[in-house]
Amino acid sequence: MLEVNGLATEEQILKVFPSIETINKGPVAVIECFQKIPCNPCTTSCKFNAIDMGDDINNLPQVSSENCVGCGVCLGKCPGLAIMLVDGSKSEDYLHMSIPYEMMPVPVKDSIVKGLDREGNYLGDVRVVKVLNSKSLDRTLVVTLEVPRDLLYKFRNIEVEVE
Ligand code: SF4
Ligand code: SF4
Image 1 (tube, rainbow, N blue to C red):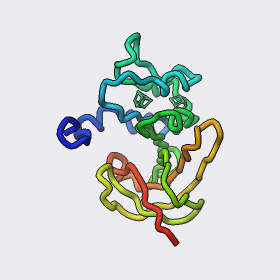
Image 2 (cartoon, rainbow, N blue to C red; image 1 turned 30 degrees about the horizontal axis):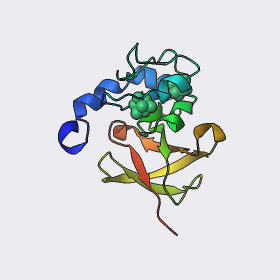
Image 3 (cartoon, rainbow, N blue to C red; image 1 turned 30 degrees about the vertical axis):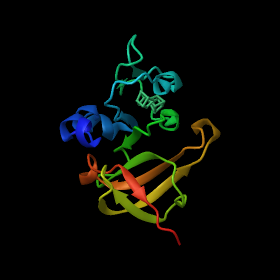
Image 4 (cartoon, rainbow, N blue to C red; image 1 turned 45 degrees about the vertical axis):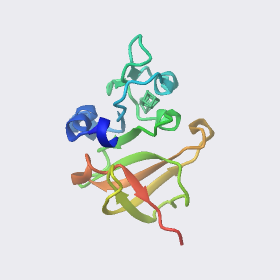
């Protein structure tokens, strides 16, 4: 539970995911921001008006999956690394899941890294599809991984081994 151990419940996580039908159409942002704090770079960075938090900066951000084009800009702007992209349009077996990443070493395209859940537990190995390092992302990398579909609600991070 968030108040006790800083972790969102399964119910909270499921609520912020769009439907599988939406995910299968293409990349869409998922925001796991569950604490009311005065923060809004996600909203102001989205040129497509896909993130709304109403009139109060303390409100929780809500994604409009209809407006979201999956550009990934908001991933690099969120100080809490709370946003990822999920894309089910690539394969019947795998999803492309893009996460913000600020650790070292930097993952390499096509390498195999450890897939982790929200608590840092190992889920299985995943392939690095893309590593985006753009000025517009404020030096936060966006790493896209090929993740088995059954890990959709579990996968959240990676561990890259030092060579
Ligand atoms: S991925 Fe792009 S379009 Fe979607 S919410 Fe983030 S900034 Fe907006
Ligand atoms: S920028 Fe991140 S932490 Fe701040 S409100 Fe948006 S999702 Fe939450």
